Length: 465
Length: 98
Image 1 (cartoon, chains in turn purple, orange):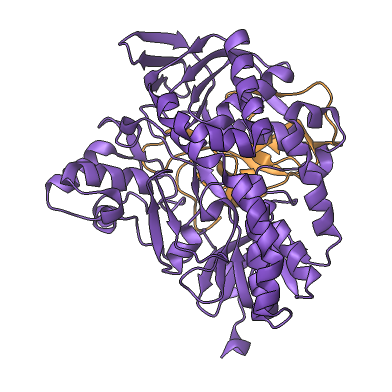
Image 2 (spheres, one colour):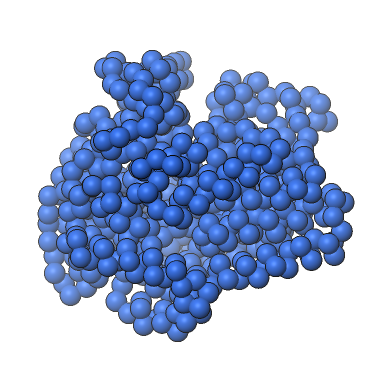
């Protein structure tokens, strides 16, 4: 049952696909596994089916461009196993996964985790009600299923994605009841010193973003400086309450509320491997500590793409190529000097692709009180543990996230802390007078995706001794 | 809660949501189908019995869990629909026997 490959890539988004193409160019035996049914990751989801259709025009050029990368991947000779869930990685590196209800194990010369990002969990009262979704979720529904909200939708958040989706939705004929901008006052002032570097490197991206904002402000009721939101309802959202920085409060009818407060790297795999992580104060998140090639503190395990820190699709492709070059050198297909020489112009392009980030990070830095929600807010969606319960634990001693997990069950549900890890860390830090990097996150234990006993029973590891 | 754009590109198929036949497009996810069936929800929670609906659509929130073709706690956002698929909203904790 256990197989061996030169390079196992987890994730078929921009970083994973680009790494596979580069590694194949140097003759490596490459296997790419991915949870989705088709290549592209979240940004280019369903691109093979959508490319060339009217929906591609709605989604825009940055989406449509993905088809070139996907086509190069399809002809690269890399093996591709979609619909695969990886649920454990070990030093070796060795990875355990499930596909079509059967578990298997793969031994890899090197492992590249190209697992991307998730939307930052941003709890508020009522965020678990049906009718509250993330902006990313609604955009996925448009990409993968060609569907839009059937009634006027409220969009609340901070970041490029809510503006982009609002612009796409208007183009698709959708209706927006209102746009609640949660970007705090003063962010433009903070971001301005970084504007010239961004404008010099990627002027087109900046113009695009300004175009989205202009379209939203012109065509949609736009409420700036929103500081609080609450979804109200019984079995589903019925009303939405919001408060602005100047103290204005309103309660409005709402059936669908889309929220977004930025992205954070997916770090479950590297946490499970006990890799070293660092706190990124500009993006308010942890990320794995990496060398200049994307290698973690665990030998042979690399991270590329947004999992290495939020950088966007263009940067993800380049980071994937750089990691693949180092991995090719590891297997002897390329000298170290050769890899460095090929990587040099890619690094130049990477610096250019990342030049807009300091500006975006400052402009769209979430408001501080987003991280420590009011007491009645559910922190852990799975086990329905509210912020007050976590605060009460902190008052009883100086527990870390793992103690809170043991006492309250927060983080023990099926999502395994993906939606509450940062909230628990922030609430503990605030209550105990510590910092989030000091408090840290839950320990991640395998399997980090739910696995059934029958899947496990099918796992044959007899040849691995 | 959601509706298809006027020009769907895929091939129409039939799936069953709690036994009711509904139209779907090949290759879309079971969660995407649930988003078109009002009232929209996928499961109730094991703790309080509250309704939950797909929230993230990308496999990280687990609120779209439902019973698919008799298998409980399936992440419907990661499950492409097939002709005749049975999607049943899940009530509370999954049963070990089923």
